[in-house]
Length: 96
Image (cartoon, one colour):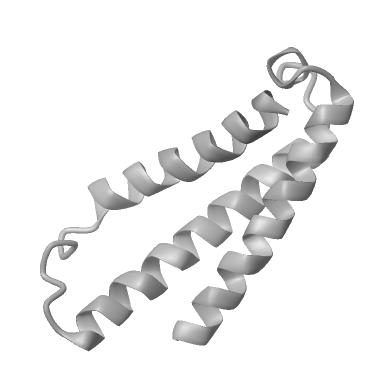
């Protein structure tokens, strides 16, 4: 279970860091619409990234099996990535 949590947290943190590096207006969120724009962009990037990684796991890559601890744990991570993508997608839609 630790590898699944680590994998999910690793995907979310790495996507967050990449998004933070790419957004030049990140620190200019002093008004509601600026903050709304940041939240919409952030949740959209996370939702797309999480679902993309879930699609990669659906291919059952042999390289990732030892890192995740087997195919069954890869399926579990795929499930949690899908749930996270759904929650982030709904959040993105509600803020947009």
